[in-house]
Image 1 (cartoon, helix red, strand yellow):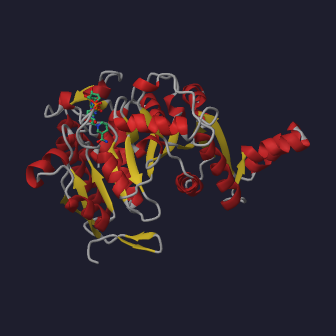
Image 2: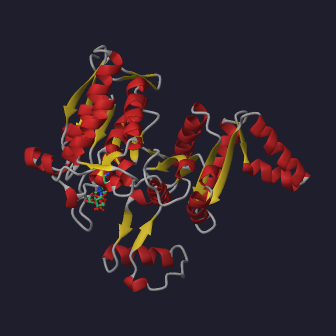
Image 3: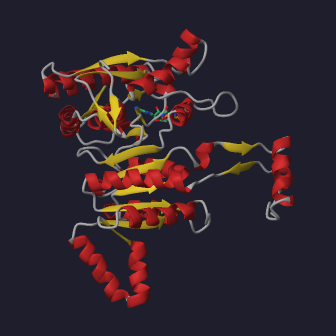
Length: 420
Ligand code: NAI
């Protein structure tokens, strides 16, 4: 099909002129999305001399969709993301209590985009609250369809909450709800299939990119069957499907118990020397501490939804904040993917031409890499690094940088385009 990505045997076939649907987004979305399209067009033109081109197709969500279609998420938008396989979006407004469900969650669930992928690395020149930000180089795989994202909750005082409590008490013998009359209830589903497909994606990524380790971050000490299941199924999957390519700390413990600590240490050293991927796990709260104290110990992270939410923002803060943290939501089986800036709509600075567009630019970098246009991806990445090294940045970053020039969004975009 002309200009459309096709998926054959689980792999994408990308035409040289490819349609990419995009959602502009609310708040600062319009400004940063426009800048992103400009930057990508120039990078693609420079790298491929007209042989390749992105044909942008605007699709609508939130306020713009309500204006044109009288609904926040028209079927046309979902159909376009399904049909064209890969797309990109700006941030979307979500009402906090009541009202409609989050459009981001709706897109991820409708397309079953089960992996939220957040790479976090440091760009020299940016100020950081930690001493050695250059040691932070991690990619977080956050499960996107289960856990708290399943959204199974009942509000205190409703007949549903009451019915659920009675079920817990009468049918399940639960006696530990401290204040039943004023409790809201939430259910956290975590499945073997859901955990395995996420961890498999993280494994494939780690092996393809020759990463040293994959860490399963969980809270299995408290939630034994959900978070603990994630850890157990993760280790089992790695030992079953990637036996020759990895060494798990699970097997380290087994060797230690059966043969002693020296043999276990030797087996680990041998695995590292053979270039095997090391699979380990850590409790979520310990990870949040270790990620600041010993960031170099971690590389690829696989975790459930809520942990992943905290982990990705903590890591982003170490390298300059959410203004430069990119993200993607991917189904590695169907190849469907939506790339997005990870920050919100920033209503306080919308329309002021001061937003930092780098999260959006770097999401586009991830998208170009994903479709195999790596030269264009690299060109943008290098141009961003050059700008920061020369002290050119938007004001959110420039205020903390030495001898930096605080540029508006459009000035920064022009500088970046010059570097391309
Ligand atoms: P936010 O990320 O929009 O803003 C938090 C703070 O960071 C604000 O001070 C803002 O000015 C600043 N900021 C954010 N992006 C920036 C950028 N690119 N450059 C410079 N400064 C930036 O988070 P908030 O205020 O909690 O959420 C606002 C709205 O965005 C809400 O409706 C929320 O639901 C939505 N949201 C949407 C997301 C998405 O579409 N992926 C993600 C997070 C929030």
